[in-house]
Length: 74
Image (tube, rainbow, N blue to C red; front, side, top):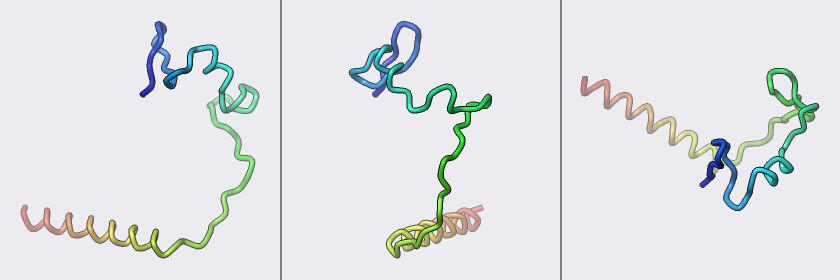
């Protein structure tokens, strides 16, 4: 659970404002005006694992059944 200091800023447990300022993930010169970090590497598609595909299909099927059930109750 993050805690807030006197200014209302939030820090992870055991870390104060000085430690948090030293541990920024990005420097100011690495982000543009909108606060977006430019991507350094491309994300390439991989082969999905059968277990992951199974859970996605089961989740989609469950949601279809929920919507059908709600439609039948209306």
